[in-house]
Image (spheres, protein in one colour):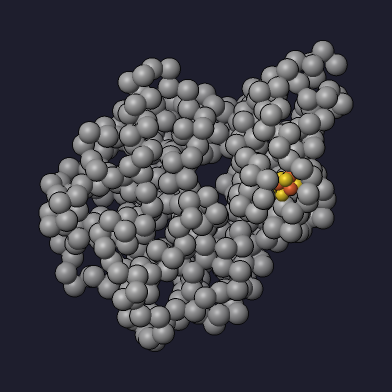
Length: 439
Ligand code: SF4
Ligand code: SF4
């Protein structure tokens, strides 16, 4: 019991935030995990009650509390609905860090996070190696473009249909850029993000193409690191801080007017999680971080609001190819960006836009949630696939590569040859004739 008392004392810093929950239960109606399990411990209200139990020292095993907290996508659906303004995501992220600090990371997590992810150059090399030798462990699914399945029984991949590592990641195509502003007079840093760099380099190329087309100077420093979300979600502030520090050093805010990303999760992490969880330890680093956070924005938002692509000018019902859009939780619920990606893809006259039902329902990936609870992740993902199917579209777009990964897996496993794309790809297609970018 002495252990639990120690944990309860550490958790005390969250007491005031946890107390703001009135137990109204409104979060039940929107929680994708609760919808599957019907288990009160899986919804925000139940998890907050669990944390209150820790404060009152009613539990004997911190490991059990950690397991319950883990069964959460950190999708923010509950927080977006909570009329009490409970800072649910912040409570869960801080609580994970406190509990993991208390129980310790598993040896696998320690190795993956502190020895690989925390070292951007090594992480790049590992993925380059995986890309080069993928034929030994992945088999391309020829009838379903863009996905592969494991050749051998793998506890990590199980029966997933995965987006394979790129043969040439973006950092090998374009290691760095520092171009002057053109007609727009603006300069944007481009934070690429791990998934786009290593699995979807075509989105990065299209982002560079689109920015160049609109006369935006690009600042692309080499050796970029992960935004830190896998580390902080796993309750590892040490690796998170190492990565944030690394990225602040790479992105000198004096060199650009804006920082754009094409990944909803990277944008959310930089804008919301960096200021929430980063202990900079110096005024200089703090000032730099605040400037970066202030300048960070989603690429769709940047193109509409800073470059001035007119939303009203975008046609909605022409074109031969039917396209729909899935709202990433981190873009819509956490950053209120939803009209902008739709406007961008509607700007391509080859496409006819059809809205899917419940477009902002979570796709079920949730980063490490998918790794630990694939059965639940898959059940939630299948509902999204039904919504996509109901539109009859042959293309589904979304503003987050993590959602793309999940949608590809679910569509491929249901033998559904729907293409999964990013709105920037569709916009770049429209501009293709006037592209200035070359490898
Ligand atoms: S909606 Fe908010 S206040 Fe109501 S139970 Fe859920 S977390 Fe608590
Ligand atoms: S963040 Fe999402 S999965 Fe987690 S409790 Fe809230 S609604 Fe449920």
